Amino acid sequence: MAKKLTNKMLQAMHLKMVRIRRFEEEAGRLMEDGKIPGALHLYVGQEAVASGVMQHLADDDYITSTHRGHGHLIAKGGDFSKMFAELFGKATGYCKGKGGSMHISNMALGMLGANGIVGGGPPIAMGAAFSNRFRRTKQISVAFFGDGASNEGSFHEAANMAALYKLPCLFVCENNGYGEYTSQANHQAIVDVADRAAGYGMPGVVVDGMDVVAVYEAAGEAIDRARKGEGPTLLECKTYRFYDHVGVRGMGLTYRTDEELEDWKAKDAIQSFEKVLLKQKVMTQKKIEQVYDEVNADIEQAISFAESSPYPAPEDLLTDVYNQGATA
Image (cartoon, rainbow, N blue to C red):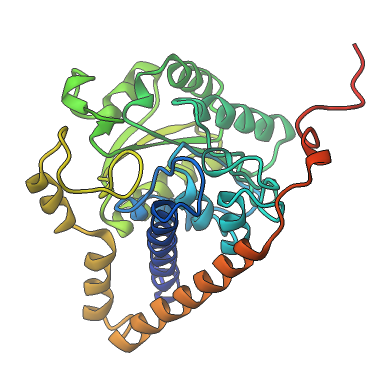
């Protein structure tokens, strides 16, 4: 059972969501300005999922992420300066500028990596959970993935093995309604991805992914089961991305309507949660504004750090890429 939420915990989840939202908004702006190379898959709209789940995790718990992975690392405690530096391709980034957006990772925080391969995370998370079981620790692993990834064989193989051996693993499907540009109705015959859990003998739970408290409570029960040795859970969080699959465009897309976007924006997880915090007197409007001011100041400092950092030296091209001492 999830721990009862204190005011401090509610404020912590709010801070996580604001940090994610503001980071992603600024990253998108910098990409549009041509300052960040490559494509960014932004997490705007889905902040409640990472924040609610991660509130239960310690640094030594493992997570695997997706191509839309900035929010997961931020919610796990990621440092803005190292994250922006990585997106800029600088040597001071988490992966020394070589991972970029889709492969950012940090082992010290248990972040086993964002992944450009759709469905690439679940088998890694399952392997980490197997390690936890083998070493008899209380650690768990959490795999974040989307509705599209739930069609991949890698997810099904990982789910089967995790259930078979009752591994301490949580599968979190962030169902934002689209596999890239294809609606769920056009790539699945089911409405709830969580229904697939029954085929592997594990619980399947559906939760409102725009409600951070609901996510927190559902994840807490699943994580408690996992730590007790009762096996994995498939947690489906119904959510929505406010931006396009890639970049910052939201309106005027051909594969979804502007009306659909506006309907989901009316459920904005951060704005809805702030209304609750104000109503319950957990935070004042002044305190909420202070949170934004502090986060914005952190972002400004982080961007300055990234811009002034050096690029990797040419002689470091193969460093951390190949095991130079390996023998056949």
